[in-house]
Length: 330
Figure 1 (spheres, rainbow, N blue to C red):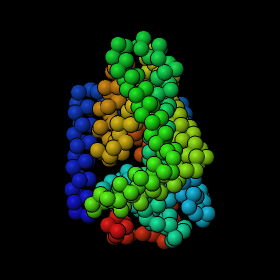
Figure 2: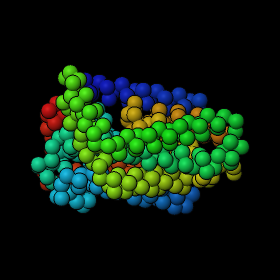
Figure 3: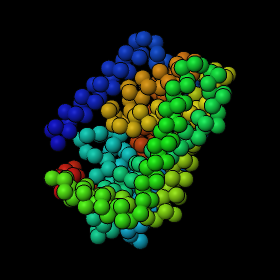
């Protein structure tokens, strides 16, 4: 717990340092917050869209959990997912939101094994990432001409999106490999010292879920929809300040790259790092104030995550941080 606390403090200091530098160098325009709030219902529209995206993300995870348990229902998983988002955003490192929400899922079905639950969280994140890559890759291919005309710096970014799309396609092919090949892979993993058995167990569960192609296809489709909703929310917050040559179709190629960059939790909720990445991304497309646009999206997104405190307070059986630690160490 103490080690996790130190890591969290370092992450916060790192994020604050970047935000301070962006603000001092006039790259972070906080006045846009007031302008958006005065500019009609766009902030509320973005907030509503991100709530819808949050619900669909919980529904996607529930589909994976249902492959093993019929006791899983969205009316329980949605508030549980909100609780996980709240703790991951506001207490990162002190208590892992993912492990906390697994404890609540176990209350729904105590027979669910830890390895299966961890696998569903991992698969859910991978499927979410695949959906994001598909959106970025396909939009980059479809709007290639329009994007390249914006700036010569755009070509490497577009090529990056297309390469990621090819990588995601290869991953899906591996996911649907014949059982005979999968069996040999599992046997090789078990040979690994210390982590072999756990890694093989998680991989086996991963492939078992992957055998249900209907679930995988549905969850990937949901992921694409979720990210399209998120990008639309980003546009609703920033469209009043964008150059005339950058519209929502360009954002379908720009925003996913930025969101992929903050998938690794280097800082709480992507603070600082996300601002810096979006600043440079938008510059490549000939647009200033990328950090300020991300800041608007960031603030609305953490407001949505803040809603997780409501189900946590109302939940009858609360789990302690010690239980989370015990689950992590098990």
